[in-house]
Amino acid sequence: MFIPKPEGYEVVADRWEYLYFAKERGVPVEAVVEKVTWPENLDTAVWELDLGDGIKGVVPASETGLADASLMPRFVGQKVLVKIRGLDKENGVAACSRREAIADAQERLFQALKPDMVIDAVVKAVLPPDPANNKPASLVVDAGGGVLAEVPRKLATRSRAHRLNELFRPGQAVKAKVVHVDPQTGTLKLSLVDAGPDPWEGLVYKRGDVVAGAVVGQAEKMVFLEIKPGVVGIAPPPLRGVLRRGDRVAAVVTAFDREKKKLHLRLRGGRLA
Image (cartoon, rainbow, N blue to C red; front, side, top):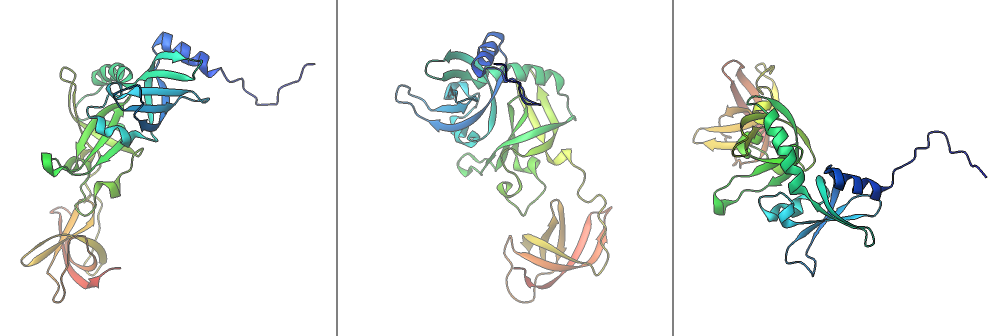
């Protein structure tokens, strides 16, 4: 007996057939990193991927395309592009390579990118400072097709008051400006700071306005307050009490000049809750 399909019903292609097709044609497949694990039969860490319909993908550390295997856990829960290298339908497993998918994408990306271009990027990891190697905090961003670039803090944000993990999260879409690109060496330098407008642009303050800011530094006779990322004003220190970096306070505007990027303040009360 013929049973008509419901309106809007779509026939979904068999997932295994698609993976065989992708393997033969070398088409990258999107998958989600479910976990990092250390199989008993391998001497390396691997990503386990969800390829859909219960099919598991496996990517050894050497095939992740990451310069440092210690980054592998930071991709858990995120989507990646991989090429299928082998299929075991009986056990529901596919051998995958992100490295191969990235190699193809990098060639095309580096041909397209030019200095001063502003591109869409996605944050993949927020790295803390590494004092042992004299490295500041940084972001790892996907510039396209899984091609990664590390963005140091000074090029990631104008804020001096907030840590990078307070401003960015994995999976967050951002704009980035191409500072340098070299297809020969595979070097890509990006700046999130230069992709946005000057933070002083359009600011309007008048004498007597009350604003809130965070302490980002102190000198003998002044306190530096960040009112918003990239906008720092100065104020005389409080007559009583001690302010520490990160404290939020209220302040009254005493002078403002947008062209000269000058903002003078007077502290109003103590620390904000």
